[in-house]
Length: 115
Image (tube, rainbow, N blue to C red; front, top):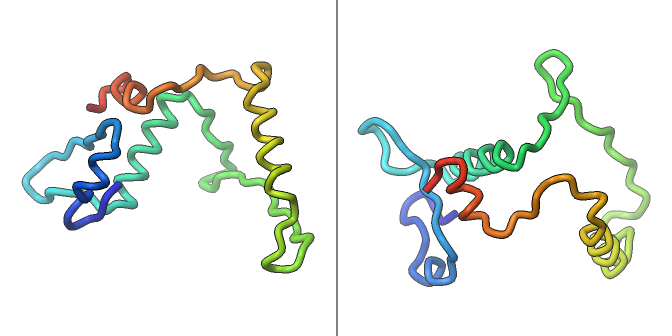
Protein backbone atom coordinates (compact mmCIF):
# COMPACT_ATOMS: atom_id res chain seq x y z
CA UNK A 1 0.00 0.00 0.00
CA UNK A 2 2.98 2.32 0.23
CA UNK A 3 3.14 5.11 2.74
CA UNK A 4 1.22 8.31 3.17
CA UNK A 5 3.94 10.71 2.09
CA UNK A 6 6.00 9.23 -0.70
CA UNK A 7 3.97 6.22 -1.78
CA UNK A 8 5.83 3.10 -2.85
CA UNK A 9 9.52 2.87 -3.53
CA UNK A 10 10.81 2.04 -7.01
CA UNK A 11 11.82 -1.44 -5.76
CA UNK A 12 8.31 -2.09 -4.41
CA UNK A 13 6.75 -0.97 -7.71
CA UNK A 14 9.02 -3.28 -9.71
CA UNK A 15 7.61 -6.40 -8.07
CA UNK A 16 3.94 -5.43 -8.49
CA UNK A 17 1.70 -7.11 -11.06
CA UNK A 18 -0.57 -4.07 -11.24
CA UNK A 19 -1.87 -1.06 -9.39
CA UNK A 20 -5.21 0.03 -7.95
CA UNK A 21 -6.15 3.68 -7.82
CA UNK A 22 -8.83 5.14 -5.58
CA UNK A 23 -10.66 7.97 -7.27
CA UNK A 24 -10.53 11.21 -5.34
CA UNK A 25 -12.74 14.23 -5.76
CA UNK A 26 -12.22 17.88 -4.99
CA UNK A 27 -9.03 19.90 -4.64
CA UNK A 28 -8.40 19.16 -0.94
CA UNK A 29 -6.07 16.15 -0.92
CA UNK A 30 -3.66 14.28 -3.12
CA UNK A 31 -3.59 11.04 -1.12
CA UNK A 32 -5.34 9.03 1.55
CA UNK A 33 -4.15 7.63 4.85
CA UNK A 34 -2.84 4.08 4.19
CA UNK A 35 -5.33 2.52 6.64
CA UNK A 36 -8.23 4.36 4.98
CA UNK A 37 -7.06 3.31 1.51
CA UNK A 38 -6.72 -0.33 2.59
CA UNK A 39 -10.21 -0.22 4.11
CA UNK A 40 -11.75 1.12 0.90
CA UNK A 41 -10.04 -1.56 -1.20
CA UNK A 42 -11.07 -4.37 1.19
CA UNK A 43 -14.66 -3.08 1.28
CA UNK A 44 -14.93 -3.11 -2.50
CA UNK A 45 -13.27 -6.52 -2.70
CA UNK A 46 -15.86 -7.86 -0.23
CA UNK A 47 -18.64 -6.47 -2.41
CA UNK A 48 -17.09 -7.98 -5.55
CA UNK A 49 -16.58 -11.36 -3.85
CA UNK A 50 -20.19 -11.24 -2.60
CA UNK A 51 -19.23 -11.91 0.99
CA UNK A 52 -22.27 -11.98 3.26
CA UNK A 53 -22.51 -9.02 5.61
CA UNK A 54 -22.08 -9.93 9.25
CA UNK A 55 -25.31 -9.99 11.28
CA UNK A 56 -26.12 -7.03 13.50
CA UNK A 57 -27.99 -6.56 16.74
CA UNK A 58 -29.04 -2.92 16.75
CA UNK A 59 -26.04 -0.88 15.68
CA UNK A 60 -23.47 -3.52 16.74
CA UNK A 61 -22.12 -6.36 14.61
CA UNK A 62 -22.43 -9.84 16.08
CA UNK A 63 -19.04 -11.47 16.59
CA UNK A 64 -18.18 -14.96 17.72
CA UNK A 65 -17.28 -15.48 21.33
CA UNK A 66 -13.55 -15.41 21.96
CA UNK A 67 -12.17 -18.82 22.76
CA UNK A 68 -10.38 -19.21 26.03
CA UNK A 69 -6.61 -19.46 25.85
CA UNK A 70 -5.59 -23.06 26.37
CA UNK A 71 -1.84 -22.50 26.40
CA UNK A 72 0.56 -20.20 28.17
CA UNK A 73 1.39 -16.95 26.41
CA UNK A 74 4.05 -17.42 23.76
CA UNK A 75 3.24 -21.11 23.28
CA UNK A 76 1.72 -22.15 19.97
CA UNK A 77 -1.31 -24.37 20.46
CA UNK A 78 -1.12 -26.36 17.23
CA UNK A 79 1.79 -27.60 15.23
CA UNK A 80 2.19 -25.08 12.35
CA UNK A 81 2.61 -27.94 9.84
CA UNK A 82 -0.73 -29.39 10.97
CA UNK A 83 -2.39 -25.99 10.50
CA UNK A 84 -0.97 -25.66 6.98
CA UNK A 85 -2.00 -29.22 6.08
CA UNK A 86 -5.53 -28.59 7.36
CA UNK A 87 -5.84 -25.38 5.34
CA UNK A 88 -4.45 -27.05 2.21
CA UNK A 89 -6.96 -29.91 2.53
CA UNK A 90 -9.83 -27.45 2.95
CA UNK A 91 -8.69 -25.47 -0.10
CA UNK A 92 -8.72 -28.62 -2.26
CA UNK A 93 -12.30 -29.54 -1.32
CA UNK A 94 -14.59 -28.00 -3.99
CA UNK A 95 -17.65 -28.68 -1.81
CA UNK A 96 -16.44 -26.10 0.73
CA UNK A 97 -15.89 -23.28 -1.77
CA UNK A 98 -19.10 -21.67 -2.98
CA UNK A 99 -17.41 -18.66 -4.58
CA UNK A 100 -15.59 -18.53 -7.89
CA UNK A 101 -11.84 -18.88 -7.70
CA UNK A 102 -10.04 -15.57 -7.82
CA UNK A 103 -7.14 -15.75 -10.26
CA UNK A 104 -6.15 -12.12 -10.53
CA UNK A 105 -6.96 -9.40 -8.01
CA UNK A 106 -6.39 -6.79 -10.74
CA UNK A 107 -9.11 -8.38 -12.86
CA UNK A 108 -11.42 -8.50 -9.86
CA UNK A 109 -11.00 -4.84 -9.09
CA UNK A 110 -11.32 -3.89 -12.77
CA UNK A 111 -14.61 -5.82 -12.86
CA UNK A 112 -16.08 -3.44 -10.25
CA UNK A 113 -14.84 -0.34 -12.04
CA UNK A 114 -11.50 0.19 -10.33
CA UNK A 115 -8.55 0.84 -12.55
